[in-house]
Length: 439
Image (cartoon, rainbow, N blue to C red; front, top):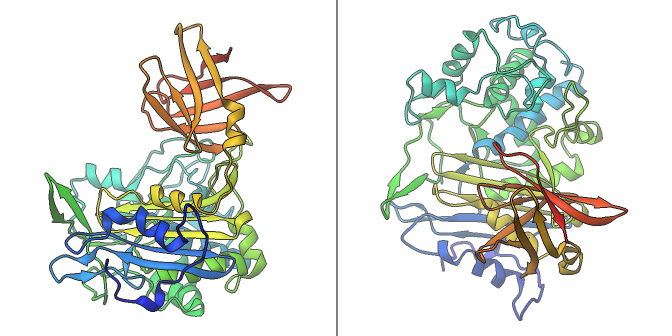
């Protein structure tokens, strides 16, 4: 096991099957604990204390550089919560308003009717076409040099939207690139300079910055990789846009960040309250998405999280406010799935809820399909068993709402009458609300 920084391996004694937290997390990452392949950096914060920080695998295979908690990763869309935080700071300071027309600050944008507001950008309800789809259609490859100006020039030429602003939610990187541009025009500084001066510097995040120059030297930076036919290959990255992505940081710097999301050291209570506000559609439906932060539920416990993925860099940062727990996992190879590990680490802190999940156990039958599922609890997880004996694992996403690990019914919603489970509906993008009644 690679242990370059033993002082940073902090352990919270939490016996489970004879193992403490350190041993349990090490066992989760055993696949990546190797001296000849890419891996991950992990940090766990509980009750304001750093309980665990470790690196597994190599940051750079060509130089045999090991990953540590101070290795710099590009965190892709985890960048968005910092961009949204910057917007929130400007709102609270009175420099901008969320319902301002985007063209007030970026008049190069087409005059849409109704107008796109900053609020629409924050909550992904603008209707703008996503920049990565536009780039691909325009003939760009992801290893081309792509700057913020490259993307903005594409957005300025757009004349149609995917939908009327505020009517729908569709995740949109374009909106966050525009938000970074708004920060620059309002403050008169580059986004990198302003965020360093107003966020990273005050928090002591000394190894963090938005990279707006793809030729810049970043000490201790990880390389992104992809495995093709059992061979690990470099993922070239000349991306130099900021806002939607582009943040380079470390696991330990992100520890400082998640602590700030509780303490308000930077921003204070007004900004902390604002960034928790979830989007609301024109229909008055409330979204799960707030300011670069996605609200959900895992095993009955509220969670706030965001993931990131770009050119071999894979990131997931999740917080459980009721547990005073935050988990950070950064990876540097395409097939790495960080959310799997953040939730497995969360399992080490969450109470055993097999008893609560047992309320869903039973046989559920669809008259339309003339088919049934058996629901059972296995290893503290709710599973569906079809007539072939195949098991589908469910993950809780809200009250009586679950996602599954199968393509044909990824969304499961249970129904109650008088507080008792009476059935569920199963849906996919093309097949909605197929009803199964409990027998």
